[in-house]
Length: 356
Image 1: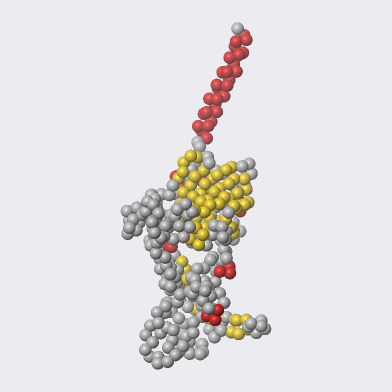
Image 2: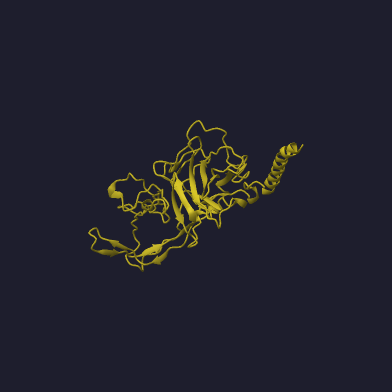
């Protein structure tokens, strides 16, 4: 993006003379003679599970005065991935097996002079000071709605420099042009938890052989929307997930044969865009599970997820002792005994009347 000092060149001035250039992905509308395969994604990459074709981006750089052999070419250093803002830590470049390229006629392979590999790892703790997502819970068998904990992500008095908003802003906020990766300041709704995103899990219905849950994702940020959003949920009953309504689904098996993790995302052109806070700032779906007699239970919060992620960030769950619990069975037992006693007395009264 910055050319740097190119005063040493009198002709054929390079595009950039800086030793630490910042490379920004091009938009999709660049001329065809400036494109290569898998280029020009506008800085937006989908996850591999959602859209494999758009999960890869490529760019090409011509480096001058670098030599033409594997002994003169030096490995690049200090890779930094901005997406936007901090959060990624990149490893040093290491030499791997040279890449092969197939010719246009498909009959010949050419080999790269050198191939390097750099691995960048995302950390939520580096990306932001606090959480960005929280979870609320409810169920059909308990009237209690467990909200997100107060000050989960921040508190109303110190969330942003301008505070939170009770109503939608009158004018749209500043939109990034995409030329430089930067974070858009938050403009959040005023809530006790002050989280930009809330996920609500509701245990909706119970059938003889199945049970149903509802997921609602709410965007509380007036300043940005989420395109190609995704959530990852961990629950022990995903091995018997029967049907998913309104979301796309892919089962994940991070522990080999244990299938307790699933990834969900929106359906293209339907709900793959989570809009800004407001009437349209939410998406929802329902999940139908088949019961496993050996494991199924509504007791002790079993029907609620064990862990949730929104766009790779961990969502904060309520405290376990705050979960909606089944009604106390002992009170039902006492009530049932009282009902039996009343019925016995009513039945015995006609018998006594007949004897008189």
